[in-house]
Length: 384
Image (tube, rainbow, N blue to C red; front, side):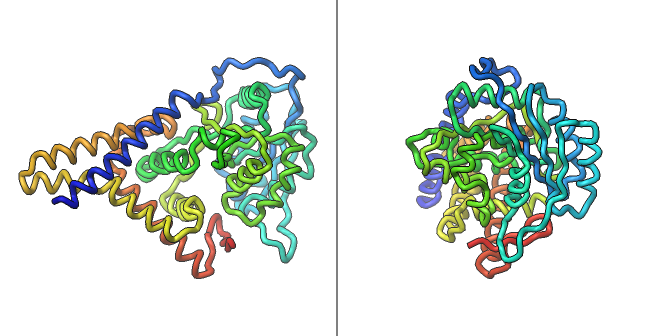
């Protein structure tokens, strides 16, 4: 029982850290929303090139492009790149931008023979070559934006004087599996590279959200463009690290209404998505993977184990401590549920979500270290 009390104490300390960190983010990192009061840029509104790559996104790309075509912004262009889709993504995109005089559709070519391009970086490079903007905005094709998104983003970037602004969209969850896993995924996403550290010029943490990266063109080119991160699955974080090393100012935030997405519709997509993202977030490290398993057990299973053990042994102090820790766990991540639009009751399923996440990371590690590569949307990527 002594060991159980010790692990209870470690679990309690872990969740208190999560509780206070997320409350700190709530108080000190304001969201960027349609109601945010922002001044007009002193030099006027710069021209923006919005670059949208897509691979097999036929279900949502039409809505995404229609929302971009309806932006309340004086000067911008939309460049859509079909990244070798095998469904009707290209046809849907052409129909969506048919009447948009500032929209272009590019049927992307495969990467040059002998070169390794991972994920969407090659598609983005093809879009950049066609871009005319002073600012570049890289957007995922599964995100739908509010009409004021461009105006608010540029106004905030110029107000802060940053070189790059990035934003987490709101995540819509509909299925059981999404509602179970996405709160944990969102929590880990903001804690692995904390938002405040990522935006602080004097700290090593570096992070951008690939779903929305607004960057000055000259700064992007001096960072080496996406060619500099062509072999990275998490190209957004790799680009952020380059910008930080160069001393560039970046700002990372989230929004409640400027952009929303549904990341995974089916369990199969969710499983492959976790497998693709979990291991890179752990930096392809076996020690960090082992630590993740230990944290999953201590952080999410120990509260329930302590409760059950206390009830079985009629050890009421232990049972009460276990119940209190279960409640703390739920309260700790409550702010995340407003971002992922999910009922807080799904916090009770954190143990299952944590085990699923670790299983996905373990599967990814097996594929990576056996040379099979990390798979996504029908392609397998081997990353050095």
